[in-house]
Length: 257
Length: 292
Image (cartoon, rainbow over all chains, first blue to last red; front, side):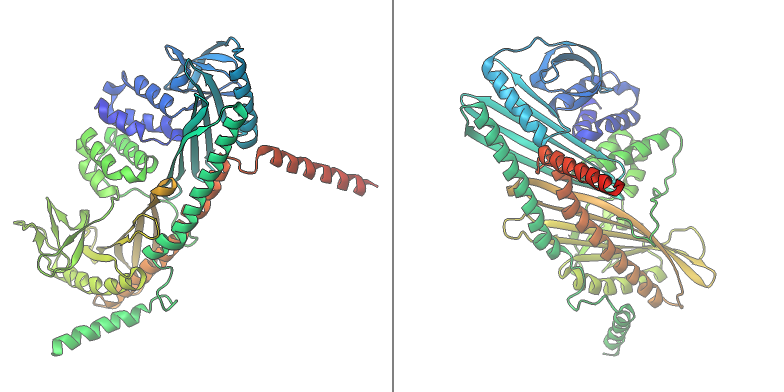
């Protein structure tokens, strides 16, 4: 039961995990309640879910964990305690400023980039023992137009190089459920300075988005058309009385033989 | 992406349970709308294990990718779905026999079997004209609702070959008609689901897949015999599929690109801000001029 609940929750698009958890609770009953917070924690960390806190957004991730449900939020200068089920910040205290010059320079460059490319996203740069980690958590919810979308970019900066990934889900739910999944990996790229790290990331993201964009065009023009034609080769809709009549004629013909 | 003269609201297919199970049933359908469409068969398995009492409901109300089997008698491919299933056997619409053979299996009444035979031939022509090489099966059954009513499903399964670095795509159409006599006409109630999956994994587009459902109702005349019914249903299927194909094309290829653009602002916020600043300064100038 617990394993099923975990598997299903892990399949949720990041913008809809709260509704999915509600459904699972309904389906699995109360005996699942005790393990749900743990599964939600795993989900939120893995999918770098952002929680709203006052007028800010804080990112939950395994790299930010500093204690029992406590996470550092370097851009906001906070340590927050959260409730993984309700997606709420229950407590917040100031985070001591990191004065590691190299880290500060990288963080400044990343936040500058974020203002340009991700004005509405939650972004964090973490200074870990052996590496620095950049997380971008960008969500879009448009109930009016029946879609949600999420993009998660995680980059590891270590030994003068940057590597990472961009994972995205787009979900349209008007009259059904249509989803597109994007998964791009950035191979280790030499980038000895913060400026070069951000430049490499920018180039990776731009190339990734444009490759997916041309794949969409390509599928539309080839694969999709080959699956089902817009109209028969005659460019006319079918004359149903005629094909039904032809069918009867063939039947009669074969009977006469 | 709704079509105007089509009924927009979707009513879940009927099921026989209440209260607690109703809430569970709704929760299950909500998951079907939210979780990755490529995982639907897996999801159905989990739902049947979590709520075994609702197994029949899950199997009849959740549209799953269509499977194909070769008819042992005729050598023609036919589609396996809940509408030609009895226990673990499936009835071929060409031979009218269950495979593997099944004792006491339920067969359609003779008159509906006539409809089935005629409709299979005619929808095979439809499939050829629109899909070139798809598999099509039509099944008819007695909904046991009222006198003169009948039900028919048209199922089409098409696998597209991989093309220039693109992986294969799959299109499944599921059309279910309920036809009820009303005065001197018949009410044709159609529910159509298209399941479509494609990808180009080499480009980072891992999957592009989904299900999309629409309903339509038409009141039409039909003479005796099945001929007019098949013509009426054929026209509705064609109109519905053509409209849904257009909607799917705009969602899969147009809107998907737009949303990606919203998740990462390609133009850059600073440019957007500059545009906004320019617009407001122009507006201010116009206002000042008008005030003169």
